[in-house]
Length: 500
Image 1 (cartoon, rainbow, N blue to C red):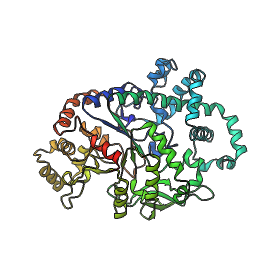
Image 2: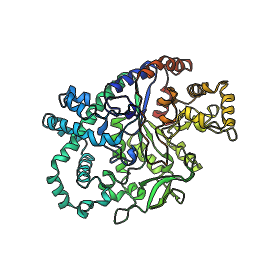
Image 3: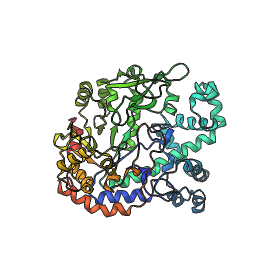
Image 4: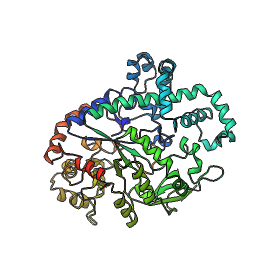
């Protein structure tokens, strides 16, 4: 479950009270891992996978109540810019309009008070923070348009004199951006330490590509396959698949892997280093793209007319292991698999992913079925891209439902959700992760994302933690019943550290 989905009186989940209470719930339920979506600032379509920076944090997660406790905000200011609305869904439009008033009020009181801490924060994060803050300040000046469309060509090309002028003219806006990042990481650190005190590790998602409209691409265009006008010749996506008959057109710029490899993938190593400060375990998104990636000509309306190109493969894995021999990784190896991709996964030693919603095809039973699983895997009910289990059951054919019921030995259709949860918990996979929506037996109106649908995603929220707390005993008993209560995750961690 993502931070945004936590209940909160301020329109979106935050690093405040509900996050601490959810950690308590996980502990009481006997769970050892909390997986989140990227904590980066959301961009196009409100997606955390189209972020303005892969290094920065989302200022919307800064908790106003904690700002009030720190005397950086008054409760009346927080109420004046309330974004609560419908507690079931995030209203990003309202948040983007109103939340900056709260953050700027905190900035006016807090920047000078915490100047020494902020200077230390700037020093520790100098490899990305300056570029991000300057990017957001200039982007604000140009009406939040994509940097490829900025009128000033010199700023677009990062010419020294133009950047110097921006630094002088936009110094306050730059300081504000830095302050928001300082608050984000300060509050996250407080929450992360509490989560760890409960014996819980955080799994964070690392999108394989940054957004085209990002500080990362603006600051390092030489690392991406762009033309002289900074337009991509090809963009990222995947061919027609389970989710879409026309494929998924992500639109992210592709890496110049050959150039990146010449300095040992230094930019990637800095990125992983930053992610390790935030998460305990990294889910490496779109792992198969390290073997082969789907390149779609820029301007195409769908992902159908792409072509496979060679990724960095073993060279990248070798660099990753050389820099981070103790790194805990989950390889998101879903999608069209080839022998090359399977070989790279085996070479890495990282556990791959299996998804129970992909298992129950009565015509072609596959390797996602529980009895076909192996230990060095992480099993999911579904990912953020899937339907909820209840929605999946409602949309399945009669033949599929009969197969599921026979496989799970479940007589009633309404018992299938917990039958699938039990199948995951009782599997041999080292780790089993379920969406919170599935434990709550919610329908597809609580689905997090529908691939290839650009708007209306990433909005689901829990309205209260009471329903979750009522579940803790049931989840704990199931965890205990299948031998995961005390040792759950130990084999996963052992495999990671041994490189198996």
